[in-house]
Image (cartoon, rainbow, N blue to C red):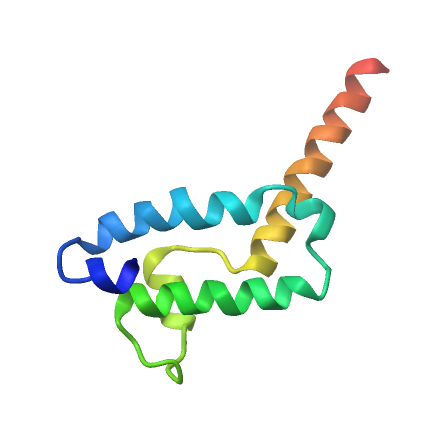
Length: 97
């Protein structure tokens, strides 16, 4: 889908499509499965999607793409979600005290 739309959409539209279609699926229950071995597979799929958005070869580095599009890797997203979850739990605990 991404490769067929590459010439028609702007980078901004691809970024929005990424967040709506891909990252929303990743974020769903990432706290439960985040450190599973399958998260490595998800990271590889994430890299493949970002390479398709930018039209890069599969051997080119994705690091600049993550920075350019301001996208978190699966690992960074897991850490971010854990911090948000912890903050929410801690604030609940202090309300009851």
